[in-house]
Image (cartoon, rainbow, N blue to C red):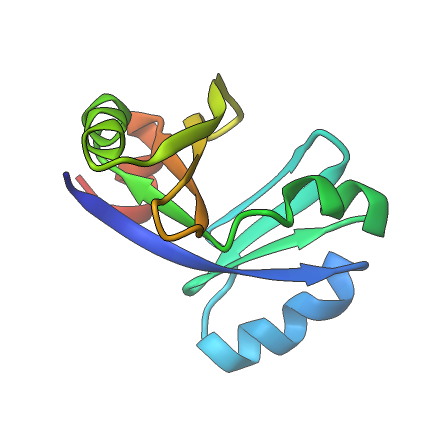
Length: 125
């Protein structure tokens, strides 16, 4: 199973208000920004910032991290083999395919397989 990137999740009411601080902190601009089902997301450095009203953000607060993987099918098989439980079945978003899984120890993680063009843009060919 190849992990390309792991993001710590940050929560905010106002993405535009918080991005200047994060730009200064990590020394870079966001490499990804998009809206999804009532929230706005930005990936900057090793942070995934999830912005929107508290009731919308709460829909995603169960996950402790977002992990970008090369092959979601391979990850799904490994999760099942090791006793994890898929809590949100595979779906698609602007970035590619994703699912949520609860690990045997209780942590819940979002696993994402980015679309090939996004992988190339963020990580290079």
